[in-house]
Length: 143
Image (cartoon, rainbow, N blue to C red; front, side, top):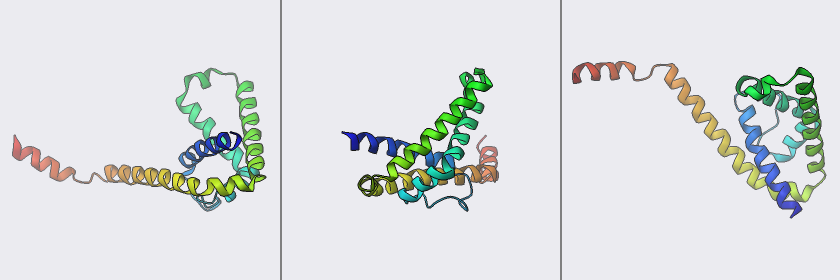
């Protein structure tokens, strides 16, 4: 039961992690398909980065977050950052779990990154106005 709960936590966290970091440069980040490297990164400096990304997302998209006082926001971010770092450190101490989860992690993170990559490519296509001239020409000839 304990391994199942940890597996679900790690799996859901992987999806969140991929979504937060896919649009950023990978120069200082671990190889995302290596669970152990990601956990080491999270136990060190990754947790404050991820929590910072989550707080930024909440600040831009959640009215309830904006309505909270600055002190509460500070403590939530601080506690979440420490908790995420401690969770990563705890998971690093269970090599059997890491070995068990690694193949699933790799598949899930690749799927999420592939999806996010296609969305970035699609947004770039829309920005380049690909096919606009053809659509305008077709619309004029139609009506």
